[in-house]
Length: 328
Image (cartoon, rainbow, N blue to C red; front, side):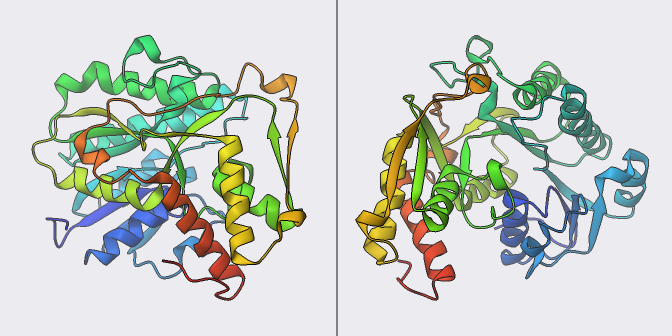
């Protein structure tokens, strides 16, 4: 449970996938004084249904506006979750402005006002390193998104000794779960493979050995809220994954089997086929991620990934097919 009462919690990206789930968790713990910072994007607004918050601010209105509005509140914590996470965006200036400059603004605001600051970093920083360890030897971003996240992590690392109060970065691996419906090509692969089978009956896989670390959004939220309450945790950056990599092939089979077991599709109606990796992705594609050196406050939540993916798939089927199968 949160130890803060009668104060406001700020969640950037609060209308998005992880952010909205975080606001939901905060509400469930008895806190309703939440300020959401996001953009005005109708695709996300369904995520806000059922949430309690006292204000919704657009980051597009600029830092002066944000500072003025935030100054109206007695803030207990800033959870900086918002980012442009589209790995295919080539505009480095846009990525740096949204993901680096805005992050610096929220961090500096939190320092000026002595507010705990917890933010989302990314496993995209590791690129195609064979080890996902928080160390400069293993950090090789492949795209503007990864570089923007790496730059802010560098800023935090170099200035960590000067910070007053809590500053924690969490390197998210591939997050899946309810609330990602609006993300399109940036949704998790469990979600995308689900939609592929639902819409065409076919999952197309790149003809490469690709293995990724997946983590359930519910576990991510639990870690984030625990981090705020942990007075013993040292400032710094930590991996937030499952520590277990799953191949695209095995993930596709898992998704197919859930459809077959549910009776929604027969085995004959589902195809898993290999296609060539486009030349444009060869040097910009992560072939492997697996979180290493996970702290105990992460490991205690993020095990049993396969079972959690199955639960998520069954939850989507139960919702979209009118309770066709139960969610255990």
